[in-house]
Every structure is written in structure tokens, then in C-alpha cells.
Image (tube, rainbow, N blue to C red; front, top):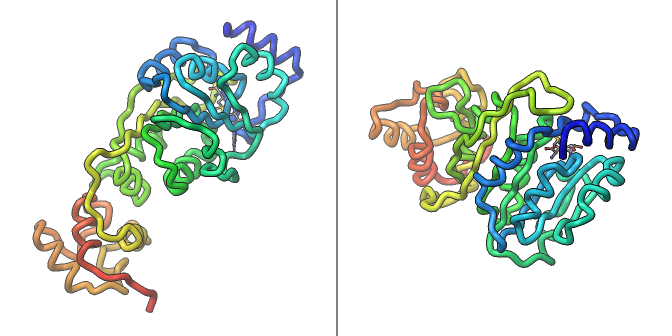
Amino acid sequence: MQINKLRQQLETNNFNFKKRYGQNFIIDENIINSIVSKANIDANTLVIEIGVGAGALTTKLAHYAKQVLCYEIDESLKPILDTNLKNFNNIEIKYQDFLSVDLKEDLKKYSYQQLYVIANLPYYITTPIIMKIIEENVNVDKIVVMVQKEVGDRFKAKPNTKDYNSLSIFLNYHFDIKKILDVSRNVFLPKPNVDSIVVEFTKKEKKYQVKSEKIFYQLIKDSFTQKRKTLKNNLKNYDLKIIEQILNKYNMNLSFRAEQIPIEIFVDIANNIGEVYDK
Ligand code: SAM
């Protein structure tokens, strides 16, 4: 939809943008086309869209996908969406807070070969949304999301950079992550204070061989408890002798900090220690 038409429609419906919901709608059709074409959706794909706005991305997704399951927290968008999406019979909108839905339950009635999440995310809850998608274990094949540039950089962070943290390890454990698009703040209504990037998460074909995810996740969490402290300090409750032996294999030792340790070394450590309980 053209920008003037969208503006007019929002005015006619007395729609007020709500900052608390992170409402910045895309007004550049080229960006939308670019996201959709890079996502490679086909007729067997079920797409989940979180945060529909006025439906600019939704109609394009519906054009290529088998079905689009959408979540939108702001029910005052309903009259606008009823108009903009009326020509599509493969879109379902649930006016709910995505963070509180039972995704597994909602997906039960759909049949599909691939499951994608494609969205221009509300920036105030980017990380909780991505964590929910992973933790609900619904077997997502691909996630393509527009996020605030700084946040996206953190997702792709490598060891020895300031952005490398437990979240980047967690995400890189599950997915191959790459930036697919830079997006200027000028293509949104209203214009936000930050630029954005579109990031693609593709399910890892060759997963790391982790014996117990529970132990692995706990180790990562504990290693980063205090980012500036050494592993020796953060992992006091662990068998430090074993951890030291493993680190030595890689010319490292307990005086290293978690932000210096690549994911495969964490995997090696996790596979050689037992469950750790608070002392
Ligand atoms: N997809 C639209 C677009 O690109 O123009 C809108 C994107 S806008 C950045 C984010 C959307 O997410 C808003 O429509 C907002 O109301 C919605 N939203 C915010 N919090 C939400 C939540 N917890 N669950 C579902 N939708 C949410």
C-alpha cells in the first residue's frame, strides 16, 4: 500500500501509534519485497508473523505461503486489517500477546512441510520472542526477523567481541545466523531513533554433539554470571580440575573469561562434566 493511502487509512480509523507496543510500520514496498524474496517461502510453508501492524508484510507472505498464522496484541488494528486482508483466505489473526500464547497448541490444526517465522518485530521484546520460539520446541526451520541493528549484531557475535554472550551462544547452537539486509530508519512510520537489520536464522544442519543440553545450558549461564570475571571465579561449584584439563587442550586456562571461549570448547567441557548443584 502506498504511504499516503496508509496514512489516510490510519487517520480515518482514528488510529494512534502506540510506542509501548513498538509500533513502527514499514512503508517501503521494496524492503517488504526484499524480505519476502530472500525468505524463499513456498506453497508448503506455514509462516508465523508476530506483530501484524497494518498488514503490509502479511499480504506478501500470504501470496507465497500455504498459510499465515499471525499474532497482534493491538486489537484496535482489527478494522484496518479486516479491510487490508479481506482478499486472502489463508491468513489467521490472533489478537493476543505472542509471549503468552501456547504455540504448540495453536499449530496443531495446521499441516505444512516447513515452518518459518517472518516478522518486523516489536523491538522492546525482540529477545523474549526469539527465546520463546526456540524454547517452545516447535521445530522452526527458519526465522527471518527485522530487529534493531545493535540487537542483531549481538545475535551474530563471535568470541572476543563485546557482544558475545550467553544469548549468542544459545542462538548459534541452534541456528546459522546471518544478516540479509540493512534497513534505514527512514522506511518506517513513525520514524524510530535507530536503524534496523534483517537477520536470518536457519536451523543448523550439523548440530553440535551435546550429550546433555541441560548441563550445556547451565554451564553457559554460569560461565557468564559475571562477564568480567574469569572462569575460575564463575565456575566455583564445578570440578575445576577437569575443566582446566579440557581448556589446556586448546591452549587456554581457567584465567580466561567466558567471552573468549568458542562454542565448541563449551561443548567439550559440558560433555565431560556431570550435573552441577549449588553448594
Ligand atoms: N508488521 C508490521 C509492519 O512491518 O509494518 C508492524 C511491525 S511493528 C514494528 C510491531 C507490531 O507488533 C505492532 O503492530 C505491535 O502492535 C505488535 N506487537 C507488539 N507487542 C506484541 C506482542 N507482545 N504480541 C503480538 N504483537 C505485538
